[in-house]
Length: 235
Image 1 (cartoon, rainbow, N blue to C red):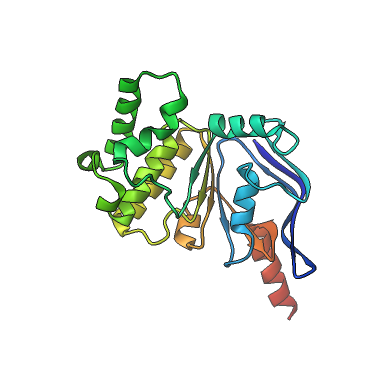
Image 2 (cartoon, rainbow, N blue to C red):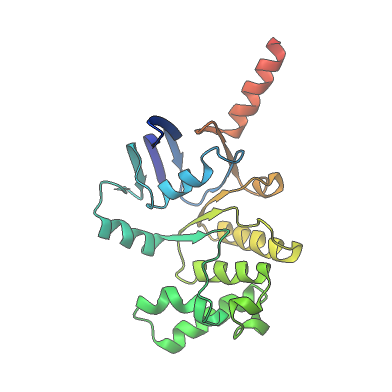
């Protein structure tokens, strides 16, 4: 469960305070598949960073599984991310001198799993993502879509219960795009919680719940449609 309570994130620029994100109350239940849409600069990435424990709010609380993220110590917050969360970003952050399978194994390097088990888990994941023939390829030898799939395998290798994704299908070829989205569908069927930021309506439609960011404020998409319809009717 993820809960936002009177959350606000402000930035100071040129002596002025700008509110990048605000939300009075929002709850994302365990196992929900949520997409967040909104124009560029609406606060989508700010929200994802807040949820992931990487950006402190100016005010309010963010609670993940009964832990108030920013009231917890840095060590506790970091441990929670490692135990429960997986991140998928447009910038893949793959290590250029490691092979695909080695990149996927990186999150397991601090675990107590034997090296052969770590490697098997990485190989199995890459195979499921259509990269069985690319295990030993370095990032520079892979297409953009293949790199995203390696990054996705790295996210899943620790079996996270919460997946936070920022524009995960941006600039992907059709095959890789469908592989990523099918993997998200499978994760949802397995009971994981997904929060996916996207500007692509077709990606948003695959979720079970859609939220919209408007001028930094988070609202249910159905509420936004209703409000827009009412405004049009009044006009």
